[in-house]
Length: 355
Image 1: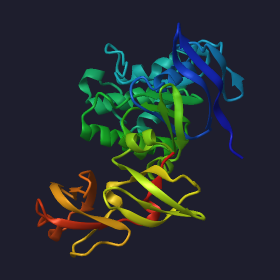
Image 2: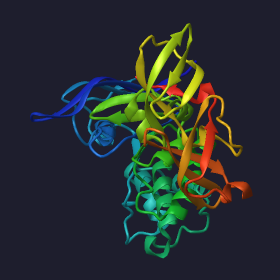
Image 3: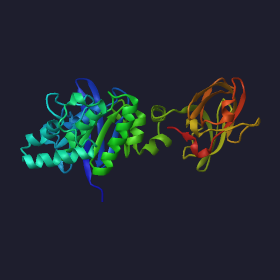
Image 4: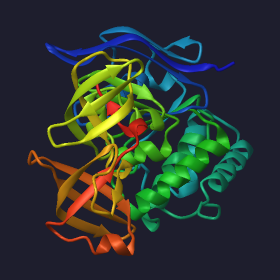
């Protein structure tokens, strides 16, 4: 049976007349990695700050474990925090930076030495204890910040855009490192980011925020392949969002668009006559022949972009609209030219009818 580590009960945050967070309920299970994802001003950092205690809730209750922490100050919530700017103390060694939370808690020197050595192993920085932060790379400094959180075994670790200051290569490396640490220790992690790829790589579940509300909560697969709203489909990954007519038949529908796309057998429970549909660019299959593809459309190649392992094709349809098609790079795709007629098809199960 799963154990709830964090629970928000109708928590709301107002700044005067401005509502930063609408009444929100959320549960995070023990050992889970949950990412708060969304654009600036969506409410994701507000939730993190409410849980950490750095701001107070206007109304509602916040629970960590079996404790109501709504009115508790941050230092009594027994959680760890990792910031974007590392927040390391430059005059202290790596060892002393990590040991600091234990010294505040008046642990014995033997226990401090043992725990610091253990967490340095966990973050793959054994032997770095006597260095100063300035002698480390950005990625190493962020791992020290993570180690400082792990050292006192908090119930929960909060991470506020911890990789935002790093270059892409370091971000990719640290994503894998954070994922490894989470799997190794089974710690509960709440992570804030606006980077969709980061959320997809790291998370057990993603909480997508929009305008101070939860837009959709689910696994990375749920949000990527089964977005419920236009905002979710558009924010997470690249997508073709198209107006379509629907002919419902039981649990499926035939969809057709002004651009000539026709797909039969699209799963749905709606009886609406029209809706917006989403198709991911990689869901299309290119037909290199001259005929119309079944469950597809024919268009004219507007342009192609080769980006190493994939090729992006933009097709202009008969109504003048454009769709994006993404395929793994093959030699025959590289010969596709501007102005060429091209047919593409899609599986009915890859067409999502949006609310």
